Image 1: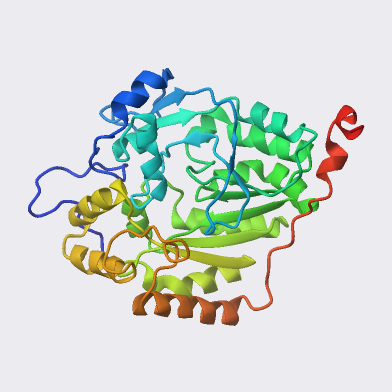
Image 2: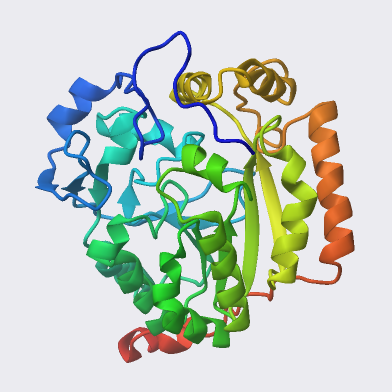
Length: 365
């Protein structure tokens, strides 16, 4: 892919390098949430900062950390997020729409104002020690990336993995950051008892595109190396090509499946891009700035897989899309899995060890 243009011909506003969103739509909840949700401010700069758009880490104090997953489209009972917001800045991220509930924008605020839950590991242990708790896989992510750059400083994700291991509790980890290799020791311990699945998100094999689409994520090569390293260490790895962006990344399906299969991945999944809420405004602004010559084609193809709209809220369809283009995408995945990943599957979780590792007092019950 040729280097993309980073400035709309009709827009002289400079492109903000190192950020996904280029604008900051107002939050309709801003006044309510700022009054109701006080936060401890802690300004921290990192190596990307140019002084104009610093990242702010905001400490918050939740009373619970596990979230019951009600969506029929997500195969997990529980999820948890040690952070809210994400420095990775992926322009398509559906989780952007949760930031306005905190009184911030889904745009630049989502990737600049990161809420930090320092007490996440203590809250998790509190849940696991309850006599009523029964082991059920926890999706470690959902509205954030647990290995985003903030994790280098706060190490909350590692502290939580230590709790999962202490209580022999099953967990699935989802990330697009090679920082996960820092915790390979804990992941190996969990894998030795069939207590962990790791999903590495790889949206594209095109590094120049990755830099605009997901500006602060690990590079394509780093992510591919992560898949290989984890696989060789005996940790079950699944790859998520999520989301597929029709007209932009759908031509990479078969090369992607072959590549990650060669590196040891045990499976691959995909979702269709959906531009709900403020994400539609952000994505359209972004694509018209970065690749104005292709913008209409990509936007129209996204509409094609969602019944003429950029967004979709219908269970069963919103993650998969519908119509001819969606059907071709799903068929390519079926063919590629059959050719490159036949008979591979992720191991079943071990749900039996947790009860044995509760405290002696709890086991009396």
